[in-house]
Amino acid sequence: MVTEHAHALLRACRTGRSTLDGDAATCPEPVTVLVRVAAPAPRLPIFGVIDFAAARSSLADEVVVHWPHRCLDSTTVDERTALCVLTYDLKFDIPLLRRALTMPVGYVGAMGSRHTHEKRLLLMWEAGTEGQQLAGLYSPLGLDLGARTPEETTVTIIAHANGGAACRCPYVPALSTATPPPEYCPPQAP
Image 1 (cartoon, rainbow, N blue to C red):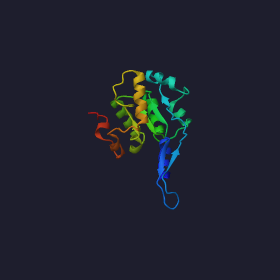
Image 2 (spheres, one colour):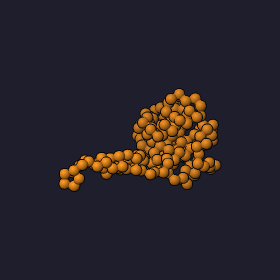
Image 3 (spheres, rainbow, N blue to C red):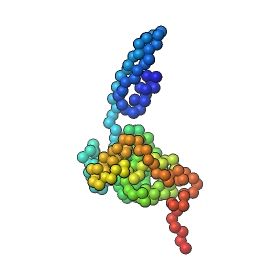
Image 4 (tube, rainbow, N blue to C red):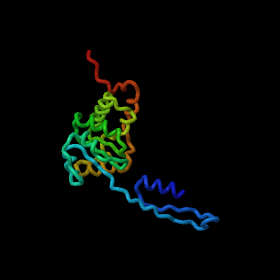
């Protein structure tokens, strides 16, 4: 019991207590164990040079000027990494997001409207990204709390990434089929 609880605390990167019930043969009284977790801080790489990214630059440990997907290849990531894409440019978004969705990160989010998100999904699907990988993309990025300023949007993004991002795009499962759903098909020429 203590071992399972300790492993859960380690996965969550949280310090906590676990109680081991007493055992008449070894220790009749319950014992409380403190599991202290010393984990590195979560990482939040932000890709993009728009005003929302600039508002977050004060939080940055480093600023890199490079092709985003190449920068990502040289970045250390783990399940506590939250990647945020704020480029608003498909020539950067698509290679970066396709690469990010194959990495062992805890969160991949992209800024943009629902229309932009659907366009990104279609382009990534056409480029060979699996439907299950596409399901790992959170977009529009951040919680819908009515944020108006870059600073308010920053709070919604961090809350979304930190909270596990329970909402996923409802269209993604259909992309795992052999053909895209009708809403992803471009209009046919007459």
